[in-house]
Length: 398
Image: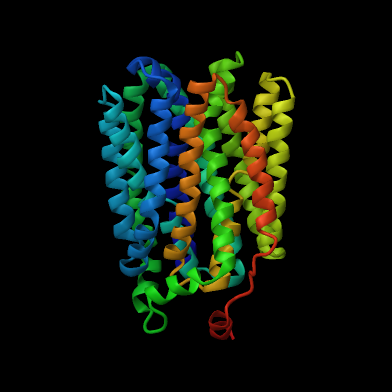
């Protein structure tokens, strides 16, 4: 097997497991809140902390992966992921939930998901195929959502939430042997010599206005996906939808994001990525607005999952692709890590803000409307981004 194929194959399997389990947490909101006798804000804050710590730790995990390789970083993340799920299954109060599901798994995700995997893939894939490869990796994370969420729902029905999290911890342990498939990318990294330092790369990105605009746009993406993934099942329950409809709405997000991520990865190789991002955010706002205007039925719930799923993480191959094109791939994990940190700050506000709005206002309406406005904002700020490769990168390719 060619090194690029091996790394891409291992990376996709890693993301199927890591992201599939992570995206299933939304279906646990209601049973955990009822069992622990807390409001939805408590579980929402745990997921918000998870997203925030995932983001805050991401640049450091990315820098470590750029320095020592993806394998040790990913194995450490997997170990923390397993411990977080196992201990979360034994928690009896909000503090325990926040430490395990929030802090521990948040830190675990920084080493076991997109930034680490995309950095490894980017180092071994040819530049002209990079956008498509990133799209395939993103689609893998979405396939994990489609494959894992219904299974997690069955575990929840059969074992209760504590037993389900123990089983999911065992599933996550498969990340450790899969990490070894990233070895060719780590060998490529150790062979790289000379050139730009990490500090120089960060300073270069900091002085690029397009990097800041890209970072602001990804904040919006994080807000959208965390709010929907965390609160959509409970929102649908409030509208009288049965539990299986809620689970399948989330599953449709995962299923259609497989197609969407692959499609946007291809589009990113055919057109300027910033224009594709503009349209993606704009259409996402339209989809949310239409969902709010229509009556909530099993059909509209599942259709919304499919539509928002197609647009779900198509931002990842496009955003990471722009970072790689403009700044090169030597420090892709680090530079994309900072962009992803903004995504997770948005995710913190989306997950926590949804629970706060519900507990204070008694509905999710304000957050839904704000999501539409943010989508329009994100579409507009991508227009002035300068996405041409820096002279240093262009000369290296020549």
